Length: 164
Image (cartoon, rainbow, N blue to C red; front, side, top):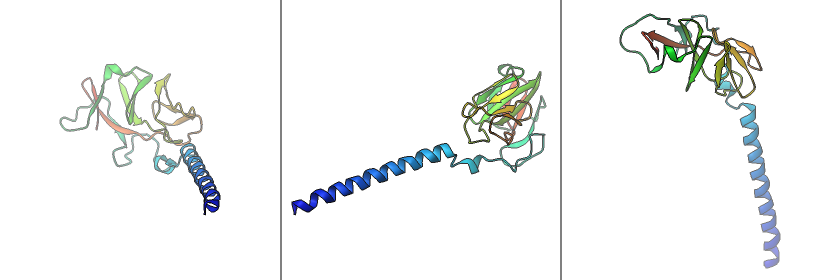
C-alpha cells in the first residue's frame, strides 16, 4: 500500500499547486483588466454641463447660493480649494476653475475606477494610467479615459462647501 500513496500524493500536490497558481493568475488579470470596469463606466452619463443625471451624482454645482437647511456633509472651506486647482475628499474631488466658481466630480477615474490623486493647472490627474480631466467640466483631456468624470452636486454656503 505504501507504494501507491507516494505517487497519489505527488499528483494531488501538483494539482493543488497548479490550481492555486491558476487562481492567482486569474485574480491578477482581473485586477489589471478592470473587472469592475462596468460599474465605473459612465458612457451613458451626459457631460457635466449642469444637467441632472439623477442619483447622488450628477446635477449642478452651486456657486454661492444659500439654500438654507438640510444638505450633506461639509467637504471643505472655500479657502481650502486653490484657484485653477482642487482637492480630493474621499469619493469626491472639488475644484475651483475660476475665482469663486466651485465644481465637484466623482473621484473615480472613468478608465478603470482608480481614485484620482490631485488637481493642478486646471487638470484632475489619475495616477494609475495618467488619465487627465478638465477641472471645469470633468471632460477627459488625456490618457486612456474617454468618458468624463460624473459631476457631484454641491452647495456653497458662506465659506463652506458641502454635498447637496
